[in-house]
Amino acid sequence: MKTYKGLQKNIRKLKTPKIETWQNQYSDKDYNIHLEFAEFTCVCPKTGLPDFAKIIIDYCPDKDCIELKSFKEYLFSFRNVGVFHEHVVNKLLEDFVAACKPRSIKITGEFNLRGGIKTTVSAEA
Image (cartoon, rainbow, N blue to C red; front, top):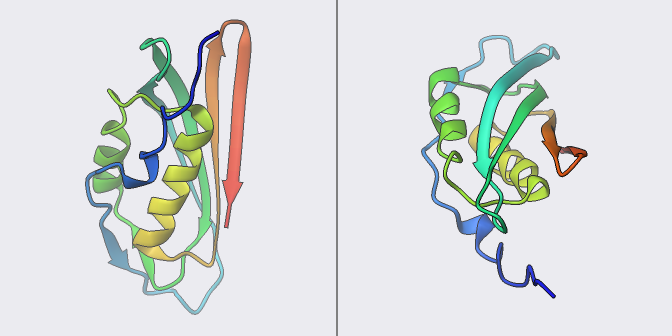
């Protein structure tokens, strides 16, 4: 029997590029920013095969907004990382919230079929 024990124990400590922000001049208003990244890739930690996903983010900014070039580089940093789908979305959420402290946020990962199963994972804060 194969085991997954210990494969992801350090995922929260994964070193990634810094997500930069810029000051929101409309922080007195509630509005939504919708981001889609259709080219997310990572690696299955068990098989080593590539995983492909569309990452969808909806957030209501507060004092800061995410700078997109640095966020793209952050997302690209997962390309060779062995990580479970569920951990991808939760790691993205933790890092995004730490970077810009939005009023609200929802991140969804729509992962392509693997073994005939499509996985969609959502997390919000």
